[in-house]
Length: 286
Image 1 (cartoon, rainbow, N blue to C red):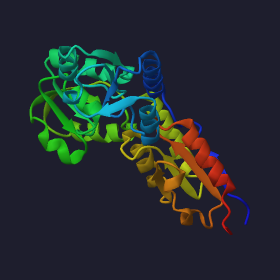
Image 2 (cartoon, helix red, strand yellow):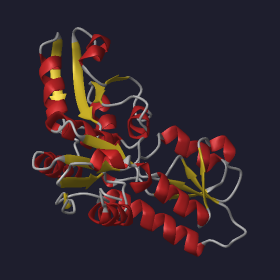
Image 3 (spheres, rainbow, N blue to C red):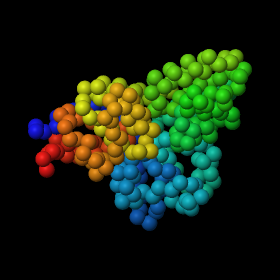
């Protein structure tokens, strides 16, 4: 049996927003004295390997402002609601903002739409931190994840629509089509999709059609990685979403000749490289 041929997606791994957040965290940790605590409000990115590595360097992840008394607070790549920032400032904490610029743009657009008299609609996952942050920027907002949520929309509304940055263009298109069939007075749509996420989606979709088995590497809580896995599964049923090599059930490799590998925007290169190296060295007989 010849070794498995491994193909890696042309576009995969860290996006600029994630790279910036990690670089910012490393800089803050390097510049802060060992006596001062550095916190991150929620995981800096959705990747456990990276979160653990930064934790060992001194970054403490907390889920609530109430857990922070003093020190420096890092705002993660997904951003936070303005009210959370106000609470942090009220406690006299040093704030370092590592919010992705594209996420900041969605927050600003949502505010602007509300000022123009639109009811803000976010196409996305209500419990995702990016969406929560955008929701916190406006007074009235409706979040629709899929067509099953369209009943939440007002029947004669003036709707201003934005989208969670990591959704796929296909999903945005489907949702706009469905919203357009409902009762509305006016629709204003701003495209807030991340081009980096789209490039990764296109690259993964093209690759998964050429391979026997497809691996999507990244945090199980990562929305953009889950989206990659969903898209790949639509074209190749032998698609597996894993965080790293340790999670792989080696049985899925038996009888496979060509494997494809892609990774979410929050997956570090060393996780991808290690996975590929193990795949290439896999021996079915052993």
